[in-house]
Amino acid sequence: MGFDVWSLFLLLALSLWSNSHALKMNPILSRIRRAPQAAEENKKCSYTFLVPEQKITGPICAARGYSTDKDRVTRLDVASVRDLLSKQRQEMETLKLVVDVDGNLVNEMKLLRKESRNMNSRVTQLYMQLLHEIIRKRDNSLELAQLETRILNATAESLRLTSRYKELEAKYAALSAIVNNQSVLIGQLEEHCMQMYSRRHEQPPIGPPLVQVVPENIPVSVPRFTNEIQSRNARGFGPERGSRSGSTPTSTTFQTPPATLFKKSPFRDCQEAQEAGHSTSGMYLIKPDESERTVQAWCEQDIDNGGWTVIQRRKDGSVNFFRNWDNYKTGFGNIDGEYWLGLEAIYKLGRQGDYKLMVEMEDWMDKKVYAQYDSFHLEPESEGYRLRLGTYQGNAGDSLSSHNGKQFTTLDRDKDTFSGNCAHFHKGGWWYNACGQANLNGVWYTGGVYRSKFQDGIFWADYGGGFYSMKSVRMLIRPID
Ligand SMILES: [Ca+2]
Image (cartoon, rainbow, N blue to C red; front, top):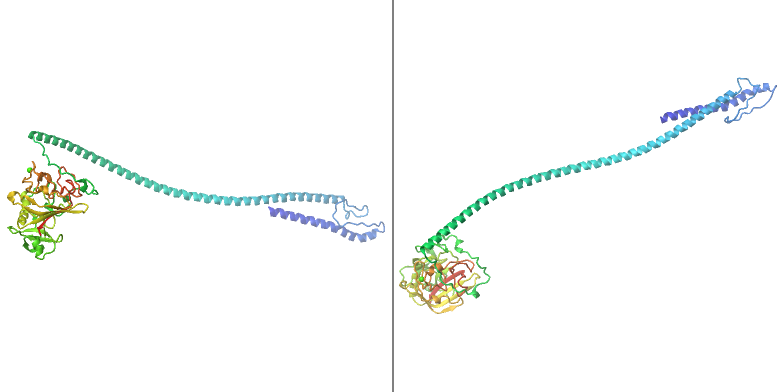
């Protein structure tokens, strides 16, 4: 449209110029042409007509009467020129208006383009925002899916636990029912026992008086009432394992080590073995002078100049000491562990000469104490292997002198001065009085202080009292120097 307007404008301008030029040129041509004519006419009338070389703006002076109608500028011509000029002016005005309108349109177009660019960038920005939102929502949906999965898993786990809990509840209910039934049964049995007991009209056995506790000698760091019978934990000893209520053995149960472990030829005691050059502690074969049989014994050659024959040893509860007379007479146990040499052998040893006795003890704080008696021997079996002791010396306290002159008592042979059998209460065999200050053949407890109705531990009353069981004990004899 702009091109058309401009071309139209150009054409109009050209035509205007050509007309005006023609107008400018016409007077000159007419003057040149009119010059010969004027020479002719000067004969009649002479005047000069000057045509200004400028745009005709005012009235044009026309010669009257002398020019031909053909050459004269008529009023009509002027009017037509004026009319033409007027039209051209109007067209110019129109064109000016058109140009103004076009300019406004161009500005408007520029504004619109600018606005369009702004809109484009805004749209791009919004598009990016939308994209970002979409991505974010997709991520959120992924997270939601994961969360849903986890919730589902947790729900399944909780359901599983609930069912497990219900199963356990059912089991608990069943066990409770069993316990209730057993409680009823126990009640019935107790009632039955009471009836049986009342029928017999018997009094329950009365235990011996408890040995007085000597608190100042109890190792204080040992926790009270934590003891258990060690023999329950001891392994590999089979029937030799000790127990509070172990069955009564019926035969001698010496465990015989291989013969090669013993030193050659039986000796009358360990001192003789030492004098024969056997200066190492270990297992030896002993045959006292009057004895008909050879016995196994442990010889202690390392303490107090050696030559000590071990007649009793406790160290780990591996051997049951709650035994009958025959067992205590012939001996039992393991020579390299816990054992009892045998009353007959001890008696025969004492027959050979003057012997002394040493009792070695170790508490649960690993403190070692001893009690020594400057003479020791037993009377024969016909006298119940009565104990004969000399004078005490040592740091453990004298808990054996009260047993001096007493016969030996076992669970099946009551030779003590108590109304009942002390062996039943003290769970061992000993030269019980009524019943005793020492019980080295009692039950081996761990931890020292033990809990029991009767004092049946390995106690030495003057060291620890009746409720402190020693960790290890040895009774050794050797000839007096
Ligand atoms: Ca008695």
